[in-house]
Length: 209
Image 1 (spheres, rainbow, N blue to C red):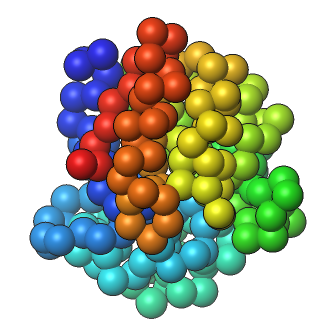
Image 2 (cartoon, one colour):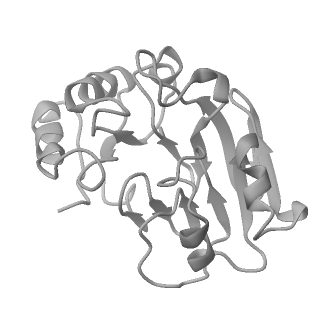
């Protein structure tokens, strides 16, 4: 498991870093300007934060976004450094292979399917990562295979702990990492509950303490 999580960091909400690849940077404390690529799942402020993006971007950074993030993105990026994506599509960016998975709520109104927001399945360094974003346990989610799964557990806007654990068992990754809890929504203890539900079934790794 250690090799799968090498150079992986998880901060608040869905803020994830894999080497120089960032997803939904939020709560970034230091200016590093080391991002080669920044992926944005959707337009909510805790996932699409221009303030945090500015701390990690540089002149060569590529920003990957859903369509409704484009106008605000142009305040920091020129069009040549922006890739607008849609769900259920495949993209290649250098050594990164990308598949966009629909990200939406089933019984809540916070993340409508019609917004065309996305989670990202990426293949990088021969490892298949899946960053779910703010989703419920959807059919598309359960059909997306991966080695490393980043899945929300906080409830209210996403799956809760029990729903996320059931989804993990269906996807069957090599390791599952809980996200989207312990700050805006969800308790820090939810990470431990998630790990306990999967103990002996799927390895987990908790970054938030």
